Length: 620
Image (cartoon, rainbow, N blue to C red; front, side, top):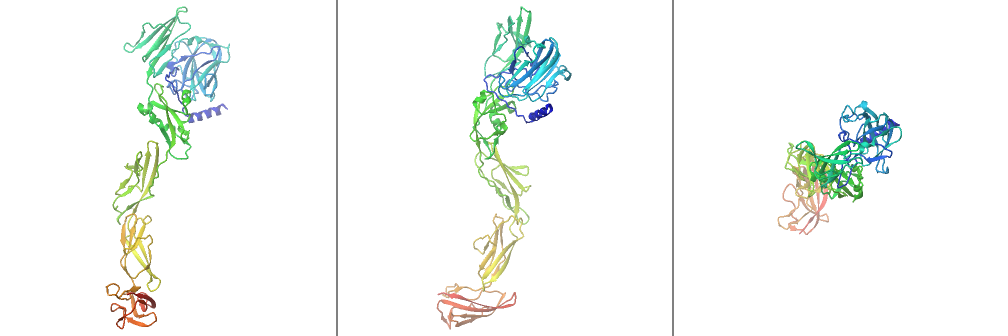
């Protein structure tokens, strides 16, 4: 079971997200976070409870290099202590860590390692002292309660203890001896403790308190950088001293009754709290997304302070959470709620000082509609040379930035790109970003070469002496035929999508095709359709004054007769001679009416003999 729990702890270590936070005008580092700042502790008749090491009071996020930490694979936020044995024996301690000082709230995983024994005056912090063969006990179990044993402890022996905070959140550690009477620790070593290093945030003074029950006289010193020595502070002989300048301070206490002198040193540093930038809202980039990365706002909040690596940002759900030092545990995957107000603070990693808080709102950001065609058509000639320029994209307005790529090469930062040659890669991509929301989208299109048809073939079916002519136009020899789109027109008529023309009148014609992306036009060779006019008006105005067949060399007319509506033969014509019938009978004009004709002809292409009858109109 122990191995299983240890394995689960290692997995948790991989998945663990730092949960850090503190809001305070005065932030004080009072733990021994490095061996050089080691603090004394003891376990007397009552349980000893003290704050753990965490981001609130420590900038040492992991164990320092040098010591052999034994079973501790990780040493997050270490707190260094030493204890002295008063009465020999086998000592057993209960170490626990909980969120609140009274042992309530969340249970926090606590781990430890013990080295010893040492003597007073030994260099406890050397790698030789803190080596593997000096480890007395060690535990890395995923528990909030651990048991520490020091067997066969002798009077005046010194033991060094590191207690780590696996959860890395503020809490309290309790130390209690569970086998009272089997040996004990010496609590007199706790009498003088100024703290190792103190950071004071946004205040102009800090009171050092060296009060002890045994002291008779006190003397305060300050370190002089010029002389590299501690110098006595005039008239400061009380148990407290008000510090107003950053520096190294020392207190010497004298117990004249026991003829004992003790001293302790402390470093006090005054800091300005970091600034916090402006941010009104943080947007999620798509509807339906369930989580948002709050850390996306961190750079905006840190920005007024300069180097972002020296600062970190913590996020809270309420101002009460700030006061209670309860930041959001997983800000990088926070459950999104439209309109939710979130609070932020910036922390200076060096000083541990926090900025004032700033609130912002969670919103959903929707990109405007943006269209980029699947294919970007480049018009080319028959040698694949680009004709003119090609444009793509659209301007979404202020606040948007664009990056166009030909493969991996950035080719433009304009909203609309204009290209005069084919790209090196077939795909062109654009990345559109909206810095205010942190959102971005990408689109791509394929570059395609398209030419006009080199040839437009014509196929004719039907005749004017039947249901009429049908003409089909077929474009040929096209670059990019699969992507080309065409429109057609007969003569100077209207453009149409269909390449088939029906009921085409007789006469000489051409058909033109154009590529609708502007890649050019191609016109067919002229073609002639045989037929007859449906009316004529012999009024001597020079237009349609006579009636005759419309024909060419492919049709041989054998006979052509004209009748009135009663079947009376009016005229027999030779269509190959003269202008045709002028609308008279025996030299006299005939009235407006419908007249009939009968034609006998030979189709020279097929050799077929045919006969056809129909009517036409004489109009006066």
